[in-house]
Image (cartoon, rainbow, N blue to C red; front, side):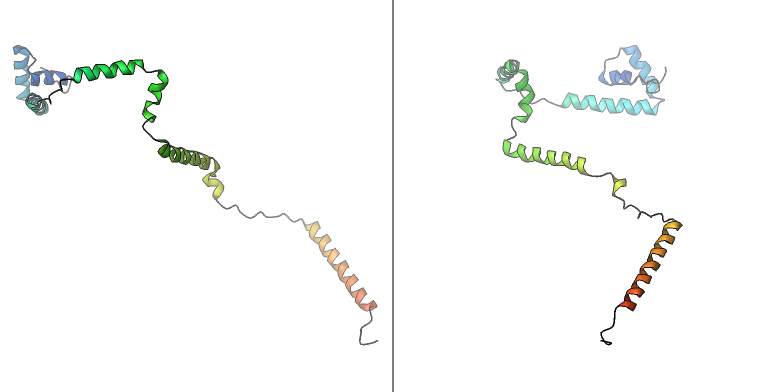
Length: 162
């Protein structure tokens, strides 16, 4: 017999643990379990599960359970599509929903206003390109201004000499 775990047929082991197999197949599984520890472990776990399910007792159902269940089904069938859609939001009072909606709006607005991380890095100072002829003209202009300044000083008499 091929190993059910290797062939991915673990449902055979589940059926064996549940006692659903015929005698011939169950005998073949038992022979295989004597030599395969993986299948033996799986079968033991499944047997423990089935034993636990056999011991478990469901709680008793109330006498008016069917009446209440069918009443709820009937009420659900009468609801419009809009009432079915809005039902999950109905229990939430407006006092709780308003701050939630405002916070959501603020988060959406903030996400649009926040810059990308690469834009937050400081930019390098911009270097101005200075051409040599500009420097030369500026120096000539400064020299000219100095000459005017010395000519003005020579023309104005000092207060001491008056």
